[in-house]
Image (tube, rainbow, N blue to C red; front, top):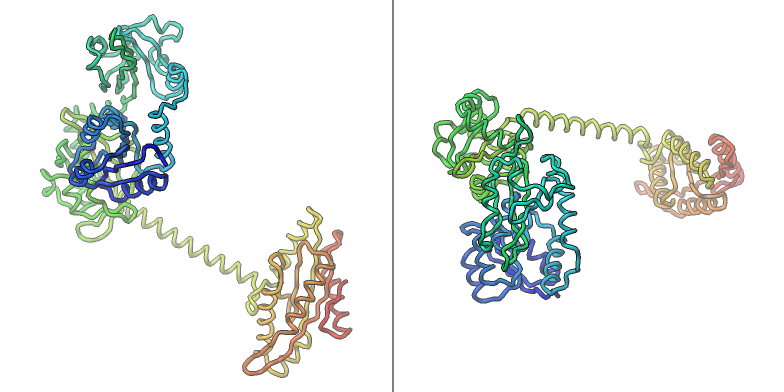
Amino acid sequence: MSELNKVLIIDDDILTSSLVSEILTSAGYSCDICHNINQFKKCIKTQQYDIFIVDLLLEGLDGLEIIKNLRKEFPRTVILTITGLNASEHFLEAMKAGADHFFNKPINAEKLIEKLRELESHLAGKEDNFNFNEVIRTAFNITSNPVFITDNKGDLYYANKYFLEISGLSEERITRFNLHSLRFENAIELSQLINQRNYKHLDTRVLESRFLLEKSHEVWFNVIIIPVNIDPVTGKYYLIFQLFDITRKKQMDNFILSNEEKFRSFISLSNDGMALINEDGLVIEWNYSMTRITGVNIEKVYGEKFWDILQWVKIEFDNETLDKRLKANLKYALKRGMRDDPRKENVCRIFHKDGHVVFIQYSSFTIKVDNGYRLGIVVRDNTATILSQRKIAAQNEELNQAYIKMEKLARIDPLTQIANRRDIEYRLDYEKGRVTRYHHPLAIAIGDIDDFKHFNDTYGHDMGDFVLIEIARLLNKTIREQDMIGRWGGEEFIFVFPDTDIEGGTIICNRIREEIELHKFEFKGKSVKVTITIGLAEYRGNEEMDEVIKRADVSLYKGKKNGKNRVVAS
């Protein structure tokens, strides 16, 4: 049982909250769930909790504000954040608000429990001793983005290899440089930021900055500045600068914003459906191709909220209709932007206004503006391609099933439904290879129904067919799993016994013979007695399979001559 025992889950997503509760309960935690503000207030008043798990996207609630209030009121509790969003600023905002860790949906049960155990250990003072500076240095050296650290005077203290590459500085002389000597467009703003005297007001900052690589080449970064090791007496501190390349996005943003008319002309002529939604969620562009694909007229969309328009056409992802969280997700994208690669292809299906189904391939992107972000949607009608692929897949499956059926018919005796002579010959070649390779014994037998012509002459061919079918059924029931049987021709059956010598084969053949002799063969009110004679031979390792079968056949002949209903070994 965990020392941090009592958990409150604050999430309006019933499925996710139930799953998290199940995970934690199975690990020994006691869980309560709140789906709305009233439940939340009631739980806080009546219970004390060690752990809070909060979703950032809550209907009618601000997840970040809840985290801030919980951290203020319960400073010693553990607060975890879960969200369907995935962006670095969401992580930073949650951490700044007071969260101890950040989880993306879907929740990984093992990692969730592992993190709680780790936090419990830390709170109990069980952390392992380690060289903090060495850990930080190693972590920054293996990260894929540029990082550097300065002190509160702006002097460089450390830079990882990626920042050294873009700045042209050397690791040996890094401490000789100052923030002013770097080629950031807003170096003055950065210097003013780190020269703040009141350490209490220092917090993590995120800003955009242009970095000049050379005269005609520039890159744009999101710069995340994190203060660390603040001394309350001297006011000395260090700042970690993490750089995330946003050059491609910045170039696209600048292109679209500075060429708005060209952009509008382009989307009006495009065969792909295109829409542009402003930061308030209103549709400001909707081309004719979008109307053709969805059936929603241009005249009706302008000035309408995009999430309201989506309700006019039914949208399904993997046969699941979009739920009410769509509106919250869109609002969040317009407020915070999205990090998804716009080249990523997503597929869904919609129901056109006239009723038919349209399969669409779509991508989305956001453009930074003063008051938030604009959301762009590009849609392509993929119906013909998908239907064609499905038709081809169905045809291929039909051909495959037909081939399997033909292959089966080619190897199965149509009357007895056991292997035919062709299939047995094929499998004998395989067994010969095994014997040659591993030197295991192999026995082969030929069985012939005694006086079979009597059944046909006396009772008719229907009785003869019945006897053959019934014997095949008995053989399938009697032989071992590794053995093989087949109809060799007429009333003859062949038996293949892998990993079996002549003594073992004799035992199996006698069991078969006795099973047939004792069985009651009754057909259309008539009962007949049936026996079988079997000749057996063991493969010698230096002969062809035809020779083994011939020796078994000779033994069969001897058995017939000496009274039938017996097993004779070669």
